[in-house]
Image (cartoon, rainbow, N blue to C red):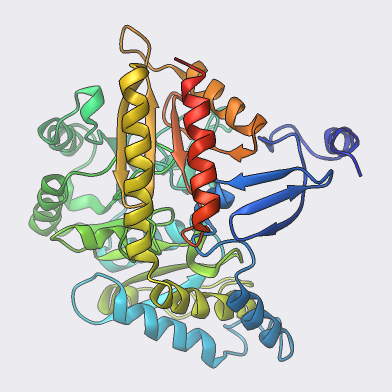
Length: 422
């Protein structure tokens, strides 16, 4: 097979709305390396958009899924339950950073987790309003599109969004948006759009994903927690991208002195298999009536089996510590490059959730430069992703299990891609 021929077939068989970044097609993968159908090799710093913190085809994931295949692949948990689902919920309940006893429900995608967190919040509070933030990404279903703080390409052309969703400003130092500004925008929503007593939840990413890896300041979370407690609003942390050791903690919320009421998770939870979850305070999770939560594939037994070993691998291979170590090494490379490339406007990092933002001489977002770095790296065999409101940010999402030699080679390729722009 050839990539060119496959691209022609893709054009004929699939719609243009499914945007595809790479012009090459995967044939196989191992840990942090991909090979295309023509045998070309790429170091994977995308990890399926933060899905593979434990790498491609981790041996323990393969073994767990293979073992489960010998028993059953599907029953629909709501019809015939299985112990592994309950056991995984018990494990997450012990580790999720919420106050008091916790409960967990499983779903399939990150968007499903966020939608169900909204359902749980509305059932628990009897309120309808949802507040999210500019630059947020919460999914592609209609409710999560409404919650996402970016129009193109996510909302454009799709008509009216669901009502009762409002966007506050997320604190972004580089854009001059302070914590005070963000809290003032929240007060403006309360005075102009919806009364606080009608708001069910405030939803935010501790580190914005698609929005550009902006890290929520600790003071911001403290003030949001106080605001929620004052008005009886639930605080929901969307950890779909930031969870499972990426930031140097199992959950990014562990970096803060406050706790959320509900936490959504997906992506790296099951080592490449589709699984998501909502965990939260037990009394809140119990608010929906029986039958109100679920889904045909929710908590698929193969994905559940994979998730059990993902938690084992994170602990056994000390991936939280490794995320901190690898992130520090990457930041050092970026800081060195910044001295010769003033277009690097800012480097942001929490563990191995690292991003670099590019701006022109006037301080305006420079998406062209970000694309140039990405393309140069790709030509040399390093797969990178862009993100941010203006597409001028490169984010780094390598597997935390990446081999030392592969990581060093990737850093060399990154240096060369950055030096080529100077």
